[in-house]
Length: 153
Image 1: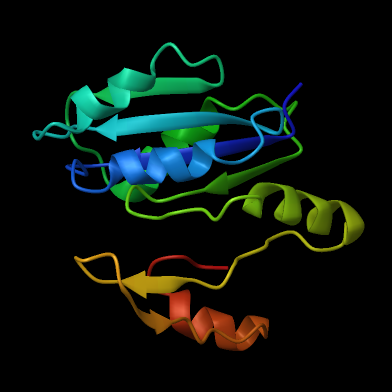
Image 2: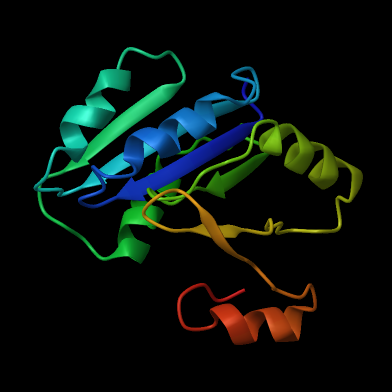
């Protein structure tokens, strides 16, 4: 049994999706299964993600038509069994650091009263250069100020 399910919904992400998938795969494969939804892309996203269809812990779902992001994420979540202890979303243009999953998993196991974890993020430009580090505080009421329009917490 895998401990973590990772979900990614992507639309026309050919520019970044390969880097995203490779960043997830640099983590310990024993820890996770990875569910990728191609949400009706019209570029080469499907071709890129289908290169991973024979990986034992990657599951690819294809939508012919685009659905709203929240519906796409719920579609992925509905595929998850109750055997996973945790799940996380990695957007199609995000990168996970090596060993991020094991650190997040150990943190969640240690602090079982916490229901959600987020990491600090770095913004990169088109040349893959970091130009800004996130500045998100940890207080729930303040955190909601940053994300209430897209990610209610």
